[in-house]
Length: 259
Image 1 (cartoon, rainbow, N blue to C red):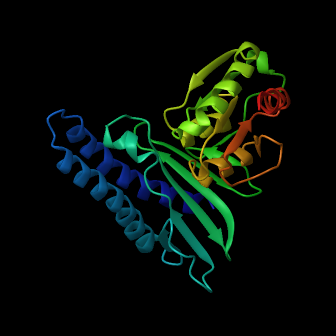
Image 2 (spheres, rainbow, N blue to C red):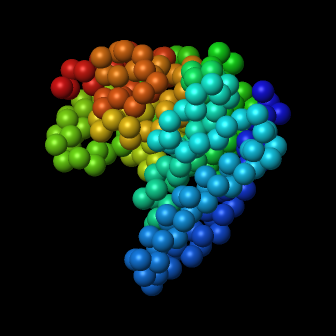
Image 3 (cartoon, one colour):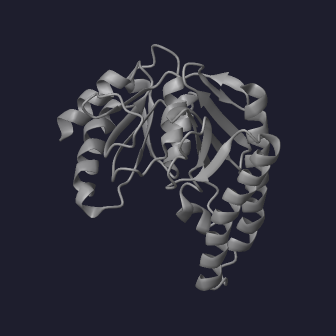
């Protein structure tokens, strides 16, 4: 699988170069809103086209589709490009966004990649084979790092009806953690849990806010990926926890008590 992932990395890197070139223009404060929107929407489509063309040339057996398109019937290998996450960050030239992709084998989720163009970091995972960063194996934070030693990251909800629940959760865990910070890009924050930079991520948000690719990478790196009630998931739940096993029990306990 490693040679295949190398080719995918190269395709995503080429798409990333386009994003970085256009980001230089997006930093112009005098750029008209209509021009900015046109550039961002064009970049979103270009990412899909560049990756698809590269993969079809180097890996013709794979079918490449955009998120939202139905999985083709009777197709063994399908890659789903989940776009630029979050698009709002890219539109403002904030260097906190990523390109996630999912791999389906015989209709079942089997792997994922996540590429950060700004740092040229390529996270990948195949179910049952662990997770990698730039083709080197990664794991969540070491055993024994309890919640009071942990760096915990969260994402503030966009929907106002969820704000009070988020604040209650933050208030419950703030005295218990080593440090707490705010996520600028949920998929990258979860990938950072996967490689031990952060110890845990949590949120209360609308479903679908985090690409599944990041969740699979974290799970394969050894993270607990559950809803607040402790049910394992690879879907973006409205109440989500992604955490290293050592700090997960206490984090989950405090969050569930905050409701």
